[in-house]
Length: 315
Image (tube, rainbow, N blue to C red; front, top):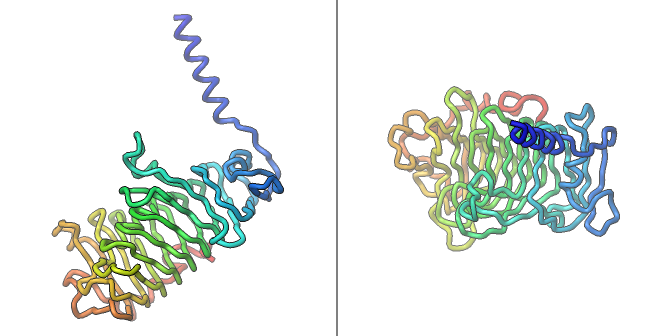
C-alpha cells in the first residue's frame, strides 16, 4: 500500500508541475526573433509563459524567419495575437502527417489553436510533409479566431476548422491544398481569399452539425488551380449536414460543371446545404450543377452578413 501511495503521490506531483509552468503574469507584449534580438527565440517559449486567461490581449510580434516548431496555443492561453511582418518571410512550419508513427490526422498539425480570441496576421502556417496523406498545417478549435493576410500551405487537409460551436474568420488569406484541404465543423467565413487546388479533387469537406445555421461561407474569393488541374469539386460532405456556400466568388475553369459531390452518400443530398450566389468565371456553370445544390435568392443571401454568421467581433 505504501508503494502504491508513493506512486500516486509522484504522479500527482508531475501533474502539478506540468500545470504550473512559469507564467509572466502582467506582460501584454513580446517579441520573438531567431537571432536573439527579441524576448525569446521560439514562439512556443512565449506561449508557455503567457498569463492564463489574461484580462488584456497579449500581442506576440514575430520577426522574419522560418520557425520549425509544432506549436500549440493552449485552451487557457486566450486573447493571443501573433503578428508577423510579412507572411512570405514569417513562417511557422512542421512536417508531421497521419501514419507517421502513432500520429493521426488530428495530431498531424503544425499549429494547433485552442485558446479563444486568437488572432494571427502576416503569418504563414505550413505543413511540409508533402503528398503523403493527411497533413494539417492549421488545426483551430478556438472560438472567435481571426486570420488576416495569412498563408496556409499544404496538401491534403491543410486547414482543420474544428469545434461544433467555434466561429472563425479568414480574410485576405492564401490557402492551397489537394484533397479536402478545408475541412471541419466550425462556422467559418472566408472573405477575399485566394484558394488554390493542387490536384483534381475536392476543395472543402464540411462536417457541420445538425441544426447549425451556418457552416462554411466563402465571400468574394477566387478559386484557382495549378497547371494541369482541371477536375475539382467545390465540396463533399464529411458529415451529412454539411453546409457550404460560395457568394460572389470567381470560379476557375478547374471547377467541374456539376460543382458538388455526395461522397457516395445519396442520403446526404437531402440534408446538406450546398449553395452559391452570383458565382462567376469559367467554373460557374449553374445550369449544370447537381440538382440537390442551390442558387440562393437575393432575400436568402441577405442573411449571410458577418454579424449574423459570426457576431460583431469579426473585424
